[in-house]
Image (cartoon, rainbow, N blue to C red):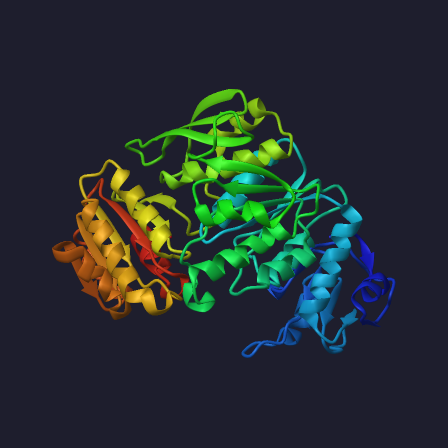
Length: 452
């Protein structure tokens, strides 16, 4: 965060100072009292189960300079009526002062992976700040923005939505210079009501562009491609359907390898390059295409960007992280979240691995609305069509996966039962994909198998 006194912060957010107004905040903002930075800002939120104000004193004792909260708790700070609104105002102020280039990313899946790729590719060339994990809501976006410093040149921010209007609100906090829309799928369709409503919400990111901004759009997704009409901004495309010779990144070819990490050929302007994508799954070649398109928009040298590709890694936990157990079993941890599209991509990545046996441990996909049963059944059918040797379905709520997978599937009641089934059965060289929506907490299966 840029250095600010409590008096300055209070003026920006419309709050009242508690204590010495000359107290300076120079560290990042956080809502976790255990993660405060020296001279940082602790944001005290009053939730239904936990009240951050109860931890304000501990945060200051741990090094925070001050607290942003909704009541005086006897430590230096700023008191406001609505902490979330105030946090957004403070973030917007910091952006207006520092004025980095803002790259905003949305989509039904892949946001966090693409955000991580962009940050890694940009870092050797520009001073960059990016969203940590998938902190992409009304709290995560301003907290990301407040991580910027006076010398930050590029801010990469992930934006999620649970309804129409959410992305537009986030764009008022962090107005984009480059808007990246990856895809429109069925994630959270139960909350949105329809896939068309999801497209409306995701397209708000394009509508938020100023006339000099750039939209980076997926040419292979017709709902995303249609967003071109929602702004007068310049459009750069990525995907297989990009017209040869047009501005953007065309995927010429993707070839699977026995490691599960694809080789991909891209055409960017007058260059054609083949690179090894050091991430598991053919879908990562599409994610990299989006990231390369952003680098091109930012004017980064193609040669320098491509030399960074071999060092790319999965920077966020639970997203196709590859582990190898002491017994030589490969475990793909993709447990952070799931929807039908990402489930199919994960299963395809598993099937591409060279392994004597391939096992999928799958749990429930949440927020799919009326189509949930059919969506789960379809995932099971996809697993069977790929020749997955064993499908372990965790929980009755996901039983339809087993119905689709057929005889290769086994339903177990919980995580403990899944681990008890797998441990004596798995052998050296086997590959295991573990995936479900976050609420299923299947990362516990990963931890049990890997000892992590």
